[in-house]
Image (cartoon, rainbow, N blue to C red):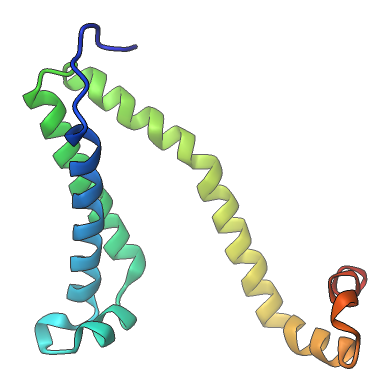
Length: 135
C-alpha cells in the first residue's frame, strides 16, 4: 500500500540512517566503558555490539515512526504494518546468521581450524580451496 500524492523528501531516508549510525556508535561507546573514562577506541573494542545495534535500531524506528506520523504518511496502523512486514522479511537473514554462528561454534568446539592447518600444511596456495572442501 502506497500513500497517494506524497511528496518525496530525501530527509525521510537520511535522517533515520544518521540516527541509526549515531545511536549505534553512541551505544557502543556507552556499553564499552566510555562513561567510566575509557578511550573511544577501547570503549568501542569492549562494547556489547548486539545491545548497541538493538538500541540503534529501536531509536531509528521510533524516529522514523514519529517522522511518518508527523508528516501524515499513513496512520499508526499502516506504519506498524510496514514495521512488522520488515521484521518478517528479516527473519530469513537472521536465521542464516544464527545457523552460521552455530556452525562456527561447532567447528571451534571440535578444533576444525587446527586440524585443517595440520592436514593441509605445505599444500600449494592454489589448491587450498579444493583441499578444504575435500577434507
